[in-house]
Image 1: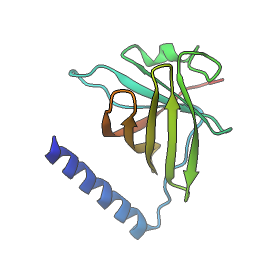
Image 2 (image 1 turned 120 degrees about the vertical axis):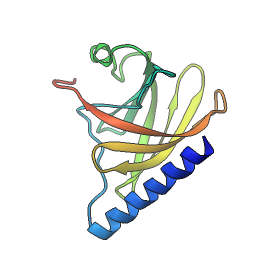
Image 3 (image 1 turned 135 degrees about the horizontal axis):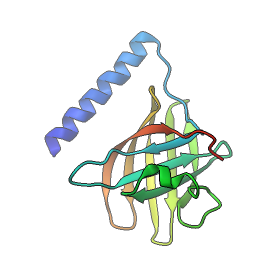
Length: 142
């Protein structure tokens, strides 16, 4: 696991170095869909994030069909964790999500290609790790 983290961190550094050399700009937050982690056979759960232009962010974990989130994954619904996000220097992102169970803190970067790379620290169960999120566009999202 430590080797995977070292390799991933090295690749991330090289991608940022490449961005600075090519003049490419960092990614931007998209509001017309969800960001999600990848699932696999060992862990079928995905964590979803949804950002709003007013600075609100919501999150939810499920192993279900992502299309089932569309009707109810909104800041008005009581189930998702909720928080406020900040973007600094056009690419640094930070926020915390609060639920009935407690608080989880996130800090990371916006990457080109509609991706997020975040350090995650749970004050609920002491989990700490790095997670990559991919964007999933949703048509007619309200």
